Length: 395
Image (cartoon, rainbow, N blue to C red; front, side, top):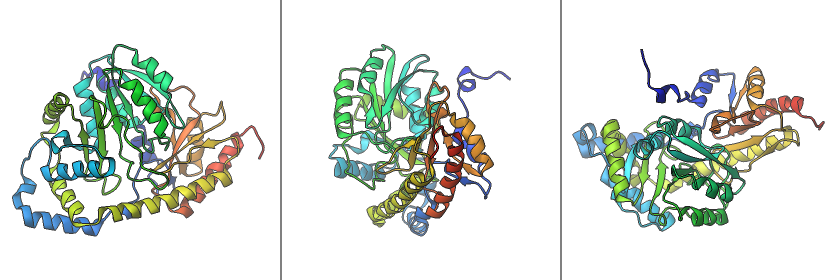
């Protein structure tokens, strides 16, 4: 059988493959970006399911509109107004099957083969995989402690084939860093001079446990702004509900067409249920419980890293979200370290798949949200033992 070049050139998800390997019960896994299942509002969702069926009957089981359930879009629009002061209308929102589908649709709408995509380095591997299907040219911009390197960004924007810039400005995946207010403004001043779309993917923004909420870079200011959001990290990932926001009417029309061609519409049952849950429960109280849980887990991991890792290893200290990014000494390959770690029954994600052009990567990602503080300490202790073997400095 003959296959398309686009699928042959798209790598299988590195993390999904790792999760298959690390699924044994005796492996301590910091690999997946999984929300903690104890945060799922199971009983409240059960009530929402029953109430939705009682109130709406067969509408939950019928075909529906492509843009999504209007009351849910109205709820999301109101949330942007309240939290960010953005004038978002329901028609500026399209409900997707998780943020991952939003990425794939954007690739379909904006990219021809060879078109340019500017990515953070390191960047979200799910986005790299989704965009790779469109066979683009990737341009990398170094991600610093406070956001993208602005000089590199402007240099890459001068490539005439660049269609869009993709960013995760809040508690970035994989690094956990958040763009500073100053860097956001500097990026805006550069991007506004170009015709490229600016994508801000924000699945973790509500999970802040330190510091202040910061404004979006392009949202509400750039004509070609695209915001992505999700309920996967705050309510449930299994229902696969995300959304695309843009006030560019022409762009939204093309997004809707691509959505129709993909799956007609997002699961309407899930949309009714999530909307019922959101309007009949104290959503922010629920999110605050998740924040407190993740703060405790993050603090536990940071304390264990400080205790067990050699001083030659550096790492990020997130103000929210789900990840810590570790940088090893030069010359230490994270992939080699992963093999050693699996022998000790502890897993992480090597940094390689987070780069579009990886070479001898000495970084890796740790997730803290799916383990207890006790398990976190034991896992980091095992990793620390291995890292000391690789360290050139006795400590």
